[in-house]
Image 1: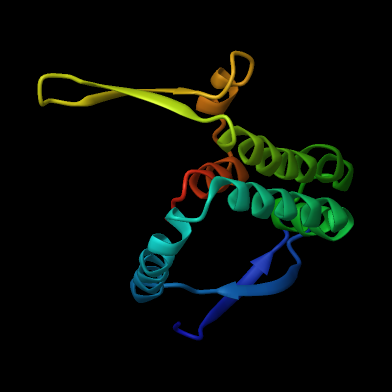
Image 2 (image 1 turned 90 degrees about the horizontal axis):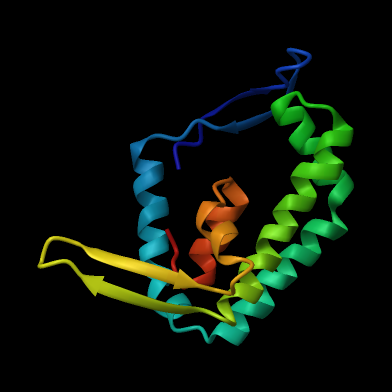
Length: 151
């Protein structure tokens, strides 16, 4: 790590409320290396264990709602009520969604004459469309962890 930091500014107030790492290419490469290093073990972790881990993360998010909501509000300059009622609950819901989804995962792939592979993912009739279109940070993180990815 570079050991360098920059001010983290609340966009609603213009106040500095903390510092964040001033990362560079070497920091990113170190993070990618760490992800590659743990991939073999994580990818072989049984789905039942991943289910427990992802649900535990959701429980910890819920248990720390006030603190996380305040951090989200300071970071984005949004109203605290919005962070408490939407953003943080959605993060824990995403972890729960993918934790349960991995327990019901099935897939098909179809080779397209050596040009590409089309994949279909099925979790359940109700959730498959939601699964495919979730695009926020917690959703992306959950999806990767759910399927044994580390990057």
